[in-house]
Image 1: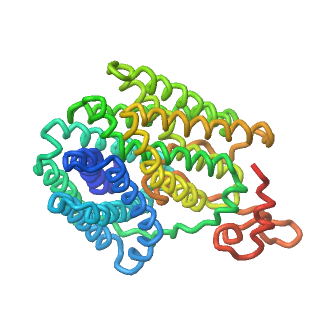
Image 2 (image 1 turned 90 degrees about the horizontal axis):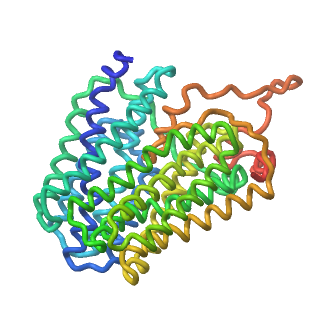
Image 3 (image 1 turned 30 degrees about the vertical axis):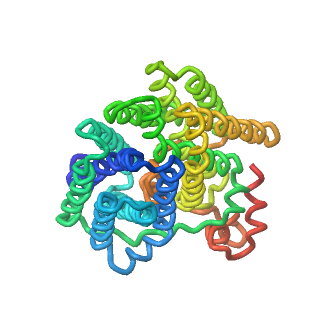
Length: 443
């Protein structure tokens, strides 16, 4: 393991530096927009364009990497992220921010893809699970450090924007100097929504629900803290509480799901999350402990949903590579992240910070109700193709670290052909997609 870490040390350093700057800017920019006098709806729109850029990047970046290779792609995306952040400090106009936030999301999807494909290529198959765990831990710690930097100044202070841009630019250096061999081309994110829904409607709907809440958390969460009267340090701690809640819930929830119906675990998580969001909605005003505890609970209930939905859908589509399942779930989840800020902003405007918890309560209750309904009408044996893996919501390439060896397709004894549905049938639209969907079963 030491030898493996030595090979990928420059990549992990780049991840750590990158996410410190990213964690800082994600919380800083909504706060800065508020100091400019923008409405909550306008600020939410800038957050939505970030996630829109992220989705577009997932679709476009693989072709960019195929043309100019990994190092050049990372350097260009790092420069784009830095320029976009500096542009936010230069321009105080909403149209400019929308373009710049879109560019930030696009750039980060590309940087995530490059680093994760490199980590996958440089990690032996029997070490990928450990590398994924280390990568996830570094990501969490770096984001937490980024939140803590908010205490160094006011949101109106351009030096914080410059500091975040400085950190982002610095992340380019370890990648530019790496001696690790460049990996294979990055897989494209393509999927059939109908077939994905047939694989697991619970996974599709609940991934969307999770995106609604987590997208709102990142885009409007700082404004929620401001509505409760918190300063920069307090807002950073509030956002950190949600991040820590999501991180701590990943592994116990995943372990439980390995021994029971994953849909039931998702339903229970969303039910508990809705109940605790209700506590935040009703009791958080004037009570800091309830406020921080409620945000912790919302993060714990929603941030593991992405990985849980990937595992649930993968259980029902064993012939489809995990990375292709993750493509669909990532796009569904990110679509929720685009819409969530736009939906929650009127509530926050009308009711204050409590509106966020009311939104989370309503959305998670609907997701839980749908999951319980599907469990009641579709009985499924407790069969898991693989153990739960806490895949971070970064890019589809992270799932390569969770899939060390793709299973060999079963062969028909009489013909020698692969039995069942192939990945091409499901995801590229070849063959008979209706037959493919039917073979998966209406889960």
